[in-house]
Image (cartoon, rainbow, N blue to C red; front, side, top):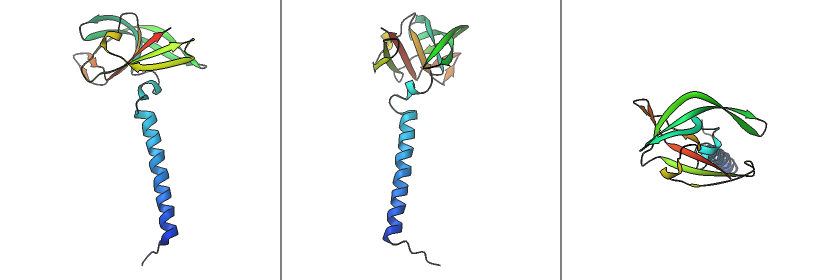
Length: 141
């Protein structure tokens, strides 16, 4: 049995495929794109940098709860160790006017300082130290 598409059927198929591709790209970009670290909640872990030794930094884990248009951070007793490497992406996120105005820029290892609030993404655990894939350093002005 032969199926005849014709020009109209072919055009409709192309439009449907394009819509699906564009929709998939938008979802991918929002979830994994350049600013995805900031859009995905608050990282694998957020908290205050407790101490730094060479390429390892320790974060006092904070429990984060969404509230209205912001969030509340409550301190825990858990300290988590992270290490940076040449592939670690560091982002400085500047917060102005109680977070109503935000700007981002690329950062570096020197931006991670004791007392700063950070969100860290990483999966690879080795000797109880997580290799940080992305670190967002929050700077409150």
